[in-house]
Every structure is written in C-alpha cells, then in structure tokens.
Amino acid sequence: QKEVEQNSGPLSVPEGAIASLNCTYSDRGSQSFFWYRQYSGKSPELIMFIYSNGDKEDGRFTAQLNKASQYVSLLIRDSQPSDSATYLCAVNKSSGTYKYIFGTGTRLKVLA
Amino acid sequence: GAVVSQHPSRVICKSGTSVKIECRSLDFQATTMFWYRQFPKQSLMLMATSNEGSKATYEQGVEKDKFLINHASLTLSTLTVTSAHPEDSSFYICSARDRGGWGDEQFFGPGTRLTVL
Image 1 (cartoon, rainbow over the protein chains, first blue to last red):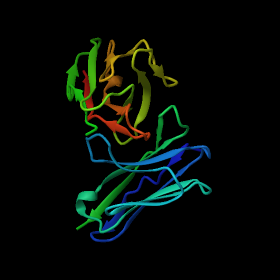
Image 2: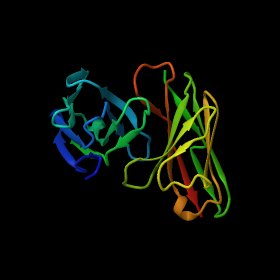
Image 3: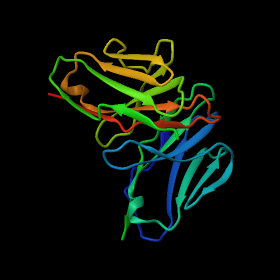
Image 4: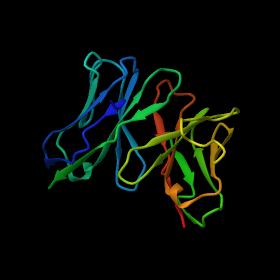
C-alpha cells in the first residue's frame, strides 16, 4: 500500500463545474496535509494546507480532512480551464521533521 | 513573500562532469531545505533534507557521495551532482521551510532541469 494515494486521472470536468480531488494516506499519525498544483514543466505551488478535521475554504478552493477515514480532498468550485494541471497531495507524517510524502498526483482537465 | 529561487534553471552537461545547483530563500530564513527529483510523469521524490550548519539527511537509496549537499547559510543550500550520467537527467526541485513560520508549509523553487548527454 502506498503511503499517499491519489487517482492519477485524468479527471475531466466542464468549465464552471466543481472538481473533486481525493487523497488517502496510510499513516494514522499524520499531522498536516497539503495540496499543491503543478503545471507541466513547472514546480509545485501551494494551494492549501489543512491540519484539523473538517473543511477549510479559501476562495474557490475547499480542503476537507477526515482523519478517522484517513482521507483529504480538494474541491475546486467554478472550475476554469486555467485550473487544468496536476494536483499533488502531500502529507507530513509527524511534526518536527517537516518531511512530505507526496502522492503521484491527479491530472485535472477543465473543458471549455 | 516566501520566494525560493534556483539557479540554473536549465543545464546540459557531458557525462562524467559535476553540476552544482543553488537554492536560495529570498525573503525568509530557512533552517531546513529539501531536495526533490522528479522524472517525467512521476511524482516528486524526496532525495534529502538539508539542515543549516549540519550534515544533510539522505533518503534511502540516494547516494550521498554522488549528491553532495551543502547548507552553509540560512538562505542557501547547494546540490552538486558529481560525475553525472544520463540516468541522472531529471527535474531537480528544492523547497524551503520558513524558519519564522508557524506551520509546516514548504515553498518550492522553480526547479532545475538537468540533461546529461
């Protein structure tokens, strides 16, 4: 079992729709969770982080964390073609090390 | 804020040569920086954790004598790929954690694309 799992996609959604990206992790002691967006040939850019169970909203993005079920998700409302990218889920397994374990990423395509 | 730069952005070298990549935190101090490698269509793989003033911590399977890391100041870490070979061709990305930040976020540099002929 991979430590951090994501569906590789591609996930195709029409422009204006909600894109839902999911990530599961294996270490129940994981502390913090991050979503990064990576355009082809570029480095990742931080979209959101979440530490506590529940939802966290920032503009069109909502991160959801459920530690009991060991999953974290990212919702993108009003999806735009410019949102087309690979979305990487990263998990920090324990505080103090600051090391991330990355998922393989989900490729999102927003169709105009 | 939280800007990380890398230099060079792209390098092409001959097999057997050494290549140095610099990673700088421009507007914050970073006691910890990370070096990743990403092959095409794959995710980021952590190579090593670079700690200011001390030896780097390498991930399993990463040769420390081949990938030399120096973190001499709070804003600069360097990765030297020694005796590079074509299989070392990859996208190398550094990240840094803000020493003054309260969270665990890492900020990524723009990456260095290495091609070894």
